[in-house]
Image (cartoon, rainbow, N blue to C red):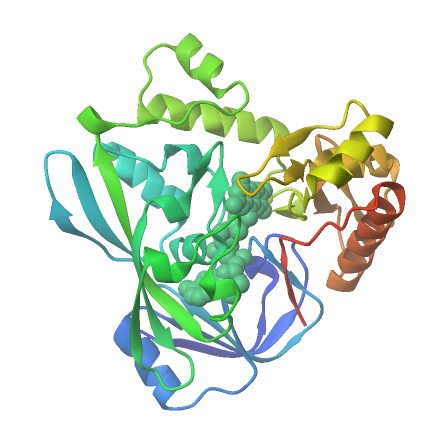
Length: 338
Ligand SMILES: Cc1cc2nc3c(=O)[nH]c(=O)nc-3n(C[C@H](O)[C@H](O)[C@H](O)COP(=O)(O)OP(=O)(O)OC[C@H]3O[C@@H](n4cnc5c(N)ncnc54)[C@H](O)[C@@H]3O)c2cc1C
């Protein structure tokens, strides 16, 4: 059934806990309903949200907010070694991960406890502990926002990259994702990714290496370093890790020998945005209700009644300070909604 509301509070639709309203809010439960909504005309501007865990609303939204409540899950193909499963965009990603592990499927366990929904997992190419959703996605189905036509994108057409995809570039604000098809392995063919941080130690110390034991370890690591958004508003990492040239990296290393640097495939160096922000002294700087999280300076938090503008301005001061101290530009990962 279609839910349609006017002057609708988005307070519980964004994990920053910013108190804003949408002129119109429409939620649909099927692809058919979505096609009908688009074909009968939508008040513009229009923006699609998932769980609101990577959004910062700068103020009330004067147009239509669309939200998918498509929640069906269907196995399309299955062999002894893998399964192709089509998941509704409105399914909570972590619920699907839990379900996939109960079904004996493997691949998504490292992404456990990432907030948000399945549709956005393809938009954002969510990633954690050495795994990215894009590596497991086979196909993305969507409805065009302009005329309600159906589209189907292969993984290649989705152009997945670090926290990036076609849907954040040429496809931005043009499609509503309805289904994401994941290709997951079955246990005899499991390929675990345990190279990140102390994940391997934690899992091995706990006993057997299984998708479930990895999931539990990932959840423990995350809860120790990330805020619970039901208690403290945030959108996770506010900035992406910057990539700079190897020459720039070498000159920074002379001045800051402890600076973490990681090789990239194209010969550049990835820096830790958290390290840069920390060295600019942001752990100690709270401005009104905005600050950085005590365990992770990459995470900006709302201690109470911060507005989107308060949070945005604070983030700009962080980016300016990193630029001034290190000559490095850090880009926002969070989507800013005007
Ligand atoms: C505490 C915390 C920890 C986090 N940790 C991680 C992490 O480890 N790794 C990581 O990658 N991210 C992380 N994030 C960020 C966030 O969880 C992801 O970006 C997630 O994919 C956002 O999902 P969402 O459903 O909330 O999307 P939203 O925030 O609502 O939307 C994100 C983007 O996707 C688009 N979108 C959403 N649904 C659809 C749809 N159906 N069709 C078309 N476009 C759509 C929106 O327009 C927007 O551009 C974290 C966030 C928090 C709050």
